[in-house]
Image (tube, rainbow, N blue to C red; front, side, top):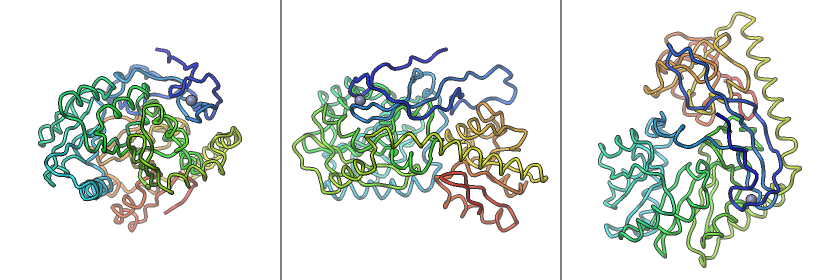
Length: 409
Ligand code: ZN
């Protein structure tokens, strides 16, 4: 199957598009394989462009979402860092907005209810929207009302007309994944009460480029937002970025507080917009060096791993997430050099990493098998994982952290 390559920006429809990064042909990052599957794995072009008009960085082509999301293997509750930060966020919004039983908190891409369950504990009504049917079913079983649908302009209007407009809409790590982004933001505008706030978290373009987070490029990840680009997008739908915070999640994200137009934006918003101008995120020069710096990283990491391997070391990897698939495939690290990948999610254990065919085992296997080195594919959770793997490291195991630069710990 071929991708439909875009001719125009998905946000502003300008045809003035400039190349940013090309990772060649890559398998779908979440297409884990059964060990007995010998069919050829499909690969698709994976490359980024930037719109010179609104400065939105985006994939050159899009895979139909139905191929990717219906049975995906990601269950948020497995990351303890995320569970903690979501509990804090629910308490904070409830206090700041004075939420009561008369309010409604909607989460788009609500996964297994990892966030909304904290609002339920505080007595605030919730509604999840989660297209992955198996994941939505898990949420409902745990008491979180969940629609198994894609969030669209039509769904947003339907919620409003059926008395279910939202005081707070959460959208964590989803706005980067929806190709029909104008339809999605129009849905937020329709579903949001006049004084409501949409709290949107999305990976931040400046961290992506400056920290060489190339492995967060995958077919599900359509957009790489700067504040400049997102401001232009929401303005088109009668919304404004009222406030913004930079948060460490996923290698550096923006937490955007989006409200109906008319609410003044904070000094933090003005300051970050100015800082993006100063960095040059709206110029070609900012991106011209990025691809070269990614290739330098590839050379450094593969040279180190091949040298260790030649010296007789055993090497595993930690973290069977999408970014792991991208890094292993782009760096050409397969089961000849990496013995196995460990992951805490039992839904992935027993399967093979897409493209490179490396078996996925339980996290406990790291301590049991004690590979000399472990390539940390989940570098965004480095502190948490290094702490959990204290016993492995004390016994002589060493982690290789590949991004933003090689570090041995
Ligand atoms: Zn544009």
